[in-house]
Amino acid sequence: MKQNKFKLNTMLGALLAVYVVVPLAFGGDSYLMSLVVASLVIGGVALSWALLGNLGGMVSFGHAAFFGVGAYTSAILSMQYNMPVLLAMLLGGIGAIVAAITMLPVLRLRGPYFALAILAYAHIFKILATEWRSVTGGAGGIANIPRLPQVLGYDFSTKTGNYLVILTIVLAFAVIYELIRRSPQGLALRAMHDSEDATRVVGVNNTLLKGLMLLVSAFMCGVVGAFNAHYINFLEPEYAFSALWVTIPIVAAIFGGYRTITGPIVGAVVVYLIDQLIVKNMLPQGHQLVLGVVLVAMIVASPDGLLGLVRKFMRKKDAQA
Amino acid sequence: MTELIMQAVYSGLLQGGSYALIALGLALVFGAMKVINLAHGELVLLSAYVAYTVESQLGWNPMMAIPVSVVVVSLASASVYLLVGKIKKNREINSLTLTYGVGVILTNLILLIWKADVRTTNSAWMQEAVVIGPLYSMRSELLFFGVSLALIVGLWWWLSRSWYGRAVRAVASNRDAAKLMGINPGYTELVSFIVAGILAAFAGVALFSYGVITPGYGGILTVKAFIITVLAGMGSIPGVLIGAVLLGIVEALTVTLASSALQELAGMGLFLLVLFVMPNGLFGAARRRG
Image (cartoon, rainbow over all chains, first blue to last red; front, side, top):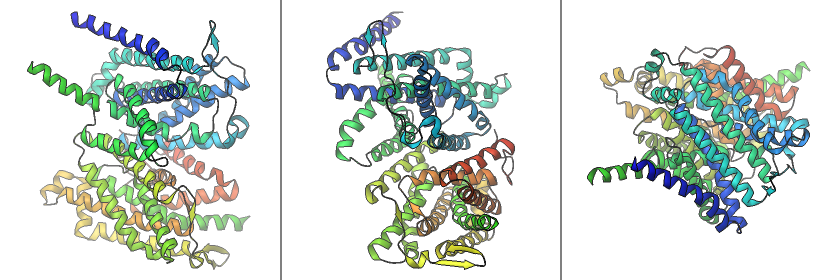
């Protein structure tokens, strides 16, 4: 009971910090704020990737597809159909779901085959965005994508406004993730880790559940992609479907621990800031080399992430005390 | 029109040779270790850049780069094996992320060393036209098609006749039983990685000799190799060769009949078609469905 209260207090404290203290303290530094917003974008993608990996047991190298489709859907809806930006962002998520539905046949494939098939899909969507010029503007891209709107007199198109929106999106997704994890379906999904056959025997339709996780993950990634399109106001296929939208989130999720909910988000902020502030200065070109090294080192040393390692250490300490 | 189509089919056929080498490497490692090496395309690309360096720095024919490429890429491939071997749990999933990371490392190393520019051979000897009846090709295309066929026959001989080749197949079909027969699975897996590296080295020099290379090409090569194994179903060498030639021809026909921008999309379309209609591949056994 006491522990629960403590948990609640730290959570409220953390919320206060991220919603009030961060904007007040760093709101004036627009470079730093833009880094933080970008790292939260990565965090959102990393969260959606980890959800699929943790609950669905699937490693995806195709999340760039969801990110790009979400971005393009939202940009096109808000520009050519004059849809309100926030609604368009939501529909960007729906667009990513549609993209994921076309991938469902891939679920028949297991493990490595699934991973490669979804990688192939990401290529397809990139080519489509490049070649379908009448809708997507082709390789030249789309410029002047509308910014986030004013709501109740507050202008969300500022750096701080963008920060508050992406923060809310990521936190909302974290809550949804937790709710799914706690639901009976979440229990079944976690049981599938231990034995897929056993869960099937007790009547769990695991293909259906895995498919649903793919759709949920796609939706989250799509909304984040849509947000990013309105945040930077520009889209081109090379950018929207870039492999970076897969690489950095994977590194972040593995770094922070993809079996946890906070891990991918914290990992994204840490990895992205280190990459941008330190590594990029030392290696302007090819600085992702370091990302690859981190990924390989993490998989070899501690595939459950640094947070997992720390937690294990803490538990040991607790047990000793 | 018929001539154009004939020409496209011929070019695609020649391209299929190198594709087959790449796909066979991927399939060999997967067979022996149940690991998909997502950095396989990058290994091929590494070899291509070694060939570029040998040509541009020493002024030699890219063919001369083969020994260097074989050494470099085999070593790189063996290092991938050593890293994969270090994975403690859940190897099937973790090896994907790990080899993906290796791919990122290799792509960026290539970017750092050789810059982002598009590279192609300057060797006039390689680019000289060879005419067979109504069909044209570059000398390098024909040459490396022959080399690929020879390597594939060699691989077939190795897998079916030699002790190590048989050991690889034994480990692939039943690891525990192979152990009981006195086969060291770890060593066998290393051998399969090295052989895959050798095949990749030849394929890389071939790609450089008749095509263009950029640092980002590796990932696409891995996907192509995967598409071929989906077409073929794993485990059959003739199947992989046919799948590779099929992919080459479909790509070449798309370039001729539609546009070069759609080249990759055609391969993907073929892949999806097979996935939907014949999920076990054109020649494969029902192994990859879960």
